[in-house]
Image (cartoon, rainbow, N blue to C red; front, side, top):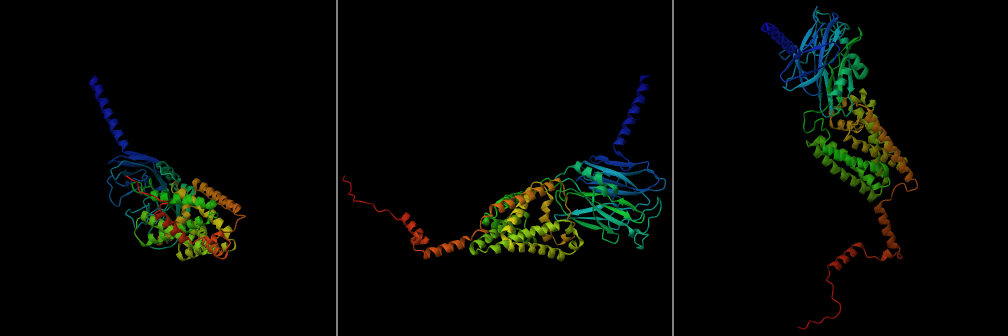
Length: 562
């Protein structure tokens, strides 16, 4: 009897194990609810959504990982045209009449374990269909946003959308006419969402993705950068910020029906998580840290005592001017490595600093040197003005001539005030530029968006196509702290130097001119004891002769008698 009892128990145990194994390779999604999914090696997971309401005409499934590719497909065996492999992937399924469930499949293409988060979003027949007029990418209906980045710019592309339609109905034609009852009335809002600065964690990314995955979340939390019409090119260029996480998305809107739908959000850090040489984890080069650490210390010195030590200030300003100019020149005309370019620019910067200092030492022309110093402040002022949203105006993005003419006008106007108030202008330059050098030194270790005040200008110098890029950068807690530091250092340095120099001459005299005047005075003043000194070359020659001449013995000596 025990045998008859044991056999049903064994059958029940086998049935439970079989059901459990099926559940392990199957994930149930609820519309609008995020589901974390882990993909093991060589494992295909079935993503299932059921009990879909009848008013839903199509759904999108999006799946996001931090830096590992995942394959999302319509069939268990992924093939071209029916699947997508990416870090941020999505598929759109148009529903048939009476259909209440959909199954899609997730897998790891590289054989590695992948963890990510996904969500299914439902849309009605009145909502636009993202990517339904795709003519460029592999999928028939492609709701994905494709991203490409380099050191200078990040480019996103997407396929045009179409008007919504009922279940089982024929989709409207894409390109027959351009009337208002076709997809040409659709508008595309491009959004940008910045992740927390200096945070490369997977948790931070998933929290950001969940905040902006749908239309409402992106509209509330993201920043709308621009709106494209259906006749515009479906491509937008942004400024690359290596090490800073950014999520981009596109929301397509139907202004006639007042409906909208979201493309699949895509993220980037503008750096590689797999590179061992210059990856996201080791983004700052040692040469850059050394260079800007020294520059920050010099800037702190100039900020508080630059005018007092005028020669040191001129050297620092000449170094900055020459190093920046030749870094741009070397980078554009040669294929040298970054470290070599930086080293050569530093050497040339030293030469430039010495030349500026020696020009004042030899000729004593304060105004000529102050013009160079004023150009440094003018450069930083122009960079700051165009760092604001003013720099993203279409007139500056679409015309390099307008941008550079505006930049040069601001840069040249600033030194004109130095003609009337040279000492005050020089002290203000010391405070502002010196304090900003400290900010750049901090940026070498902790990312801050203030570094892009000058970095955006450098990128525009080095890249001809950079003008089309949006230069938005995040402003978060660290940036407001750095602004406070910049203001405190700048104001403190300016006030301290104005107070210390209030009773001193405006500028120290030229050492060479003072030497000439002293020499002329000694020639005419016979009562000056120094007038009777031999010239310096004669004194040096006499001293050498004393050191090399053998001393003559004094007195009379007789030989010893043996």
